[in-house]
Image (cartoon, rainbow, N blue to C red; front, top):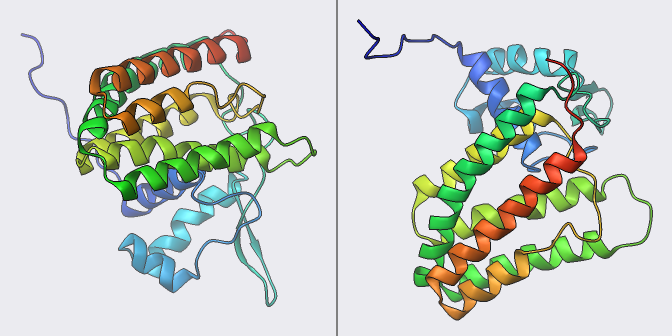
Length: 241
């Protein structure tokens, strides 16, 4: 008899909190060099005790994502991550996972773009325009700045999640965040190599949403994600795993 229901997997509060913090770092909510909120404030935001927060960040410190610094400007600081260092390299299985995530993103974000073209407000358009201009500035900048890819990733997340929010469906926004975080969990920082083409496709998506053309917006989004898949295939050399 085949299984009809999945077994329950118990996860402790500190493990869930650690995952939430890691997700925020992957999405660019906190950039390298930035401090996390003070412990009591951060624990309150996460809805956990300070003791649980300490347990959560201990593993992230050991993994090299965070560092505890002392002094007046001390606290938990996000560390800059070398390419692929967090996940121990990219395997063939990880690349296969990215392919699955892209398929999910095309389904979810294509629909989000379609609905955004129907429901967006001027406030939504302004937020998307700001995110787009930030990505454009980072992709075209010529100065050598190790934080440029991280800043681009933050604006990229704001753009894609902003489209889901413009669709007027908070479940879509959560799904977009989950899919982006899952992609970075699979391949670490492999796609954080910033090129002059990094912003390609975002202009078409924004244009169709602004024009109120639902099907064209969905098509532009899916085309953009196809480019993301191609970038992943080029950037990642599958290793045995």
